[in-house]
Length: 311
Image 1 (cartoon, helix red, strand yellow):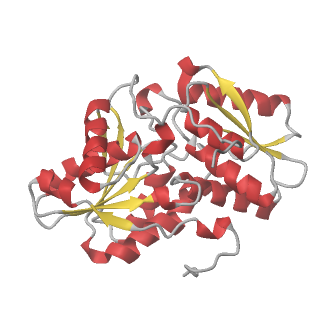
Image 2 (image 1 turned 60 degrees about the horizontal axis):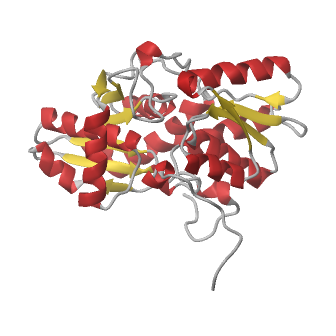
């Protein structure tokens, strides 16, 4: 276990995130069920994506795919980009990110603060447009870039298999009956779910996705209308896919901040709304774990890194 007082670098602060019990959400379930949420916003980059970015970079450095002279480039809706930027700054690796132009201003500005180059894709094409553009850039400049491709890189779910899943087992052990997570790249639900199934096959793994192609849950994928990530291999891992409306997820976000003091993003609202549904259905004795991927301030309007101060 890492030393919680001293760390050799910011990378050593990734993982070992706390679980918090959502007692107000449990009351809404109307059943004697436990609902626990893993606070991934406590990672140093502010989101669950720190885990995958760190594992992808670590593995690429180890096998030589990433080396001096290469620029790391990937498509991202924001959180993975912040994670790449933070880790790149810590390790001296230049980073370029391709993202839809309408990604939240806060995440653009955070990535820029680390010295990252931003390349914008069409806001009308969402994350799939960013994927297409980054592939084009890499094809045109194969010697310039290292392209981890978070949607196809097995190090993405590996991070959660080794980290998130094991941490949940260590915390909840045999009490755990269900795990609920949103589908973005799908790395979180695939890696965590696989580890939990190995621990006990009766644990139910539920993946939450937006119920419509035109949705307001940034970071989540409506799989039927999207480029399906190669790491999404649900057979034998995911027991159920739960469609989630934007309105239901946003309502739960409001409840979390007003009743739990947890100011989190909309994908967290979708995951907790899914956990609430699962707890209602499962009834007494259920123990449901879910993921809070990031904080709500990632979705604020313009933020600015100020150099002028008034004392």
